[in-house]
Image (cartoon, rainbow, N blue to C red):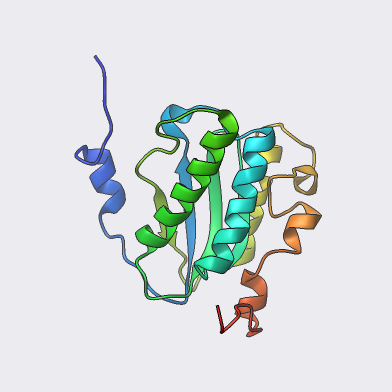
Length: 178
């Protein structure tokens, strides 16, 4: 028996149910590679990280935390525009897939269509969610400390490039003339 997932399956519809987009709200997002393939290593992981930093600026989605694991990505960021979250996140998924497929010298689907999103509630700690995200490589046995993993916001050079914490403190992080 083959189970196929797509936009008409119950699982996909369940992920969309209740999804809403609220400007100035933090979201915890997760997406997986197509069929859970471990594409996100080495140079591919590097281009995905770079696409995240490009995305946070161009789509004004300041990042608070992220990790690029071999078969999935977790992101914590802030939707600062009135554009729907699915459209903003879809833009990043398209950019990242195009660049990753170029590096892999392949064509075809890179991400699963559906993604998980969680609107962070006021009673939830952004620091706790960020710590969970950044601890993923430790939990997976890839490194001993989160700061050792180069494809995460816990990596010192990447942490300096996050705009979310600065945005939350009221610092202007986007060029008004973009």
